[in-house]
Length: 278
Image: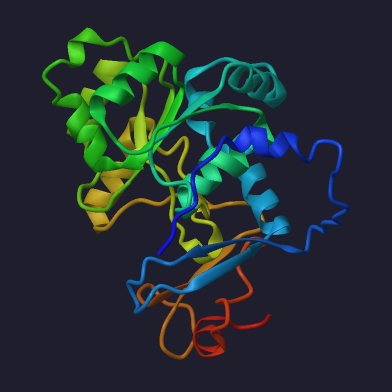
């Protein structure tokens, strides 16, 4: 087996500056392929179009920081957006090949013009140093990282007051009122659940910003069980249906949205099982 030596990516790009390929890209063309987690079997290739990626980037742009509206005084929504995106810095330590890493670290940041700080993996010291050095405003990760942050022995050596939009997903650990209080005391930022979604629908199908008021989101989750996931994004429809396809309080979640994949790559059998036209 032979191996190729690595090179400087940007030097490679320079070779093609005066010889740009003539490629036509349409918004209905396929752009990416991510893989599902495999919770329902083997991982499947999920193909997304430029249209869906653009739609989800606009959703991020308009609603990801909605929690700040309750704590600020802006005359117009445009004033609010101008404030947010004049100094937006996103720290990414989750993989870019994961759907959330792609959406937040690539699609959203390209659309909004936000600065992105990339780390190869989660490392609490590296994260704290990056937040301090680059005045990071936005982070996302499983809630495990936030428990580690608030309990870190050297946390007092770092100023984390630049943070303003911090979200997480309830995997192994979930958000609690106690965690929210500790994190707010530490950073001044209100921690909240990110959203509901899956790889097939570009992950962020709901809006949770604003529901943190008086801990309404957490209190509701404590009352009825599960995790509070907010309300659907504009143009996204979410239903819960029973085995016959009728609306139900309990059953299977079905989603229709502009960024829903057409199906699984080279897998018509699983596509037919999971997707319906109309």
